Picture 1 (cartoon, rainbow, N blue to C red):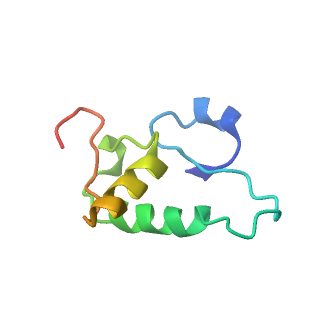
Picture 2: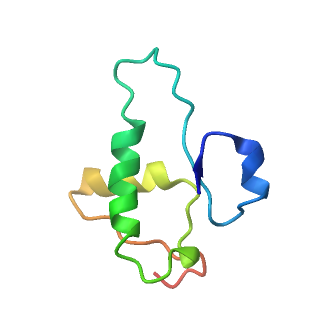
Length: 79
């Protein structure tokens, strides 16, 4: 699930990718571009339920800064 409503996190714990609310005020908003990169990489995973989705934005940015493709980050630590 993808949502900008934090209250929905309790209903989708472990399966929710939280995005920032879009208000149309920031012309440099790149949330959807970052999300697209993250979802493309999640699509390569055999079971996305094992992937830790919190702090996904930081993972995308860190991997891009290193020039590396983002790996899935398993919630059980077995990356």
